[in-house]
Image 1 (tube, helix red, strand yellow):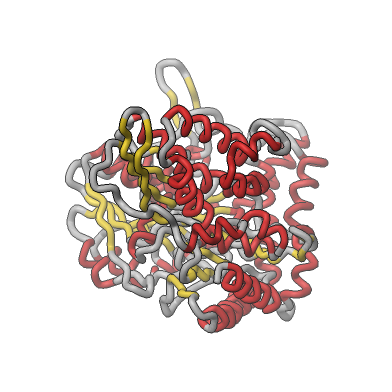
Image 2 (cartoon, helix red, strand yellow):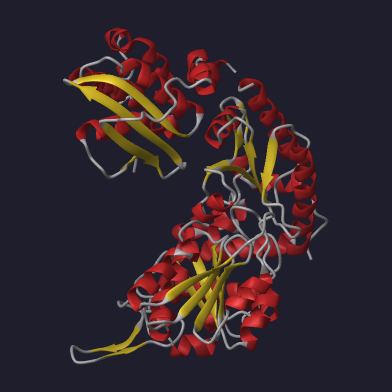
Length: 408
Length: 153
């Protein structure tokens, strides 16, 4: 547990928040797209490049040793953060998207054949749809989609009903990026396990908002991105059960992933290095480690409680604005407020808000099937992080009133 | 608010609220769809061309204020024009809203654009340029007779 939670004081640690945009103080509410970075993360990146920069794993010189140590130490931090049984179960990737593609290209190609099925849900981000479509197309397999209700909650019974003898994988979001819905991952994993179906959880939108324990969830793969967790862009991780990783074939060939190479035969390195071909984003990984340190130090439970209260406050406030309709009203939600306004396109909302210094996202949020499900071309999306305050929400509400006036 | 008025000129707001020629032509000689995958804007353009002249033009679709107004004003502008004339207007409009040619649009450009000059403010909002140009790309695709929908990407 960290010190008593004070979002206003926390803001002091984020240099970027202390600026004006368009002549107004920045109100950053696009955290589901990417979070801002605390000084501790920025310092870790600078310190690495100023002091330790060298390539990892092969150098005999001191800098290489220091870089390797810092890199592998970050792996341990990620492992503890997710509750992994072993540090080697953490594979570094460019982010969630690459982690899912890794599973699709390695586990998927090895296990999925003609007539097999992969089950996802109707609220998935494109990165948890397209890799499976590509795999299904290649293998003659079938993608099945579990429906969601009008609040944006997954219909768990219908999802479980889709799990059959041909199901090779269930791949689901932990938290929906477009709607904020929190999925009942633990229950779904238990149901899948009972039917012998492995589960991949896309945690991109979850890790920054609640404690994650992969053992307690009961999943088999868990993917997340560093940049949505106060860390750098370009780095993320895949956790998978060690036995699964051991059995999976490599997916990219190159340096670092090999044990021995001759023109006749190459043997592969051990897990996790088997899945980490080429020089990784060393600084990014170290920055991710620093982000996790920072996040744990501030206190995951305290952040979750703060955001939960702020989400409730913002939900009430938005509901009070005439003509505003929230898209995504599931009982269990995290961080995200997606909404539309009568007679105003989300793009126009976004531009007016930007003029007021309020940064939100507008568009389909890489979840076009979700937009179709709700019959809207796009939504405006405000999303919260640890450093957001009631003042930020008040500024959002005030700016939305401006939108109404302007397009009245 | 003054900056917003630069982008959302009153003419634009008016056309957004009351789009002109917002319908499907019964017997179009040309038709094309435009799509902006980044924001989900969709527009369909219908034309009746006779003897190289655009006799009638209409549109349908859903989009933001900029794209709706741009479509509405495009139809008003090119109705009755020869295809070559419409093409010339497209190029001038494109140059002005994208800001690709000059730092500031010339008086000559603005004069030639007439009412469409209200879109000059869009150049200050790079994220919104495609909202203004989408319908024009659809118009050109329709005139070129392409069957595939045009995309801004």
